Length: 84
Image (cartoon, rainbow, N blue to C red; front, side):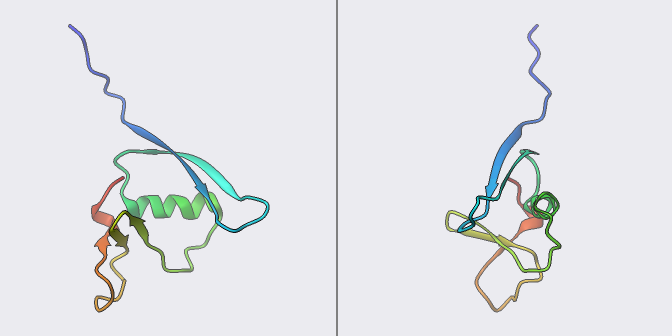
């Protein structure tokens, strides 16, 4: 009998700030099932940020953000409900 691997799927991400000299970047490993909200928290940690600005993730035509975003603004999906 052949067993399927039970190891979780992991993505290797390279996160790089644009328009910065010298380049500032991090390479991180994240579980494939990480929510975008948890990814945001992880990015704050690895980049040494203090979560002092609004943020969003744009993937193709879809935009994801925290649910505090203005409901009158552009349609955004809740990052807590979506994974990589």
